[in-house]
Image (cartoon, rainbow, N blue to C red; front, top):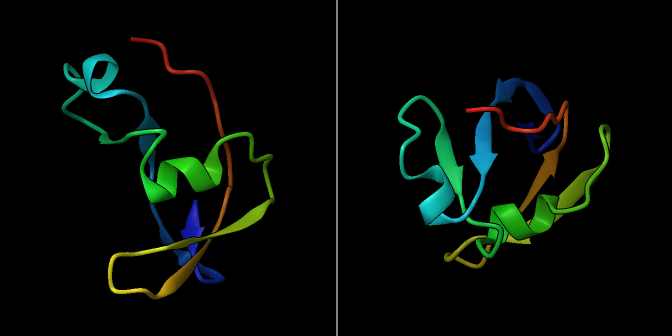
Length: 71
């Protein structure tokens, strides 16, 4: 995923509940109920979504790739 159209500003993370992601120390874990997690639920590669951060700013994110998590 990258932010606001800047393909050099990428992040890799896991969308999971706290319980599912609790043992994962190599990836940032976002809840599906968080603004970012919720924005990317059901997104397809290439989709750009928007979400609001606590400051009220709207952030655009584009999904680069997605794969099932295998522990």
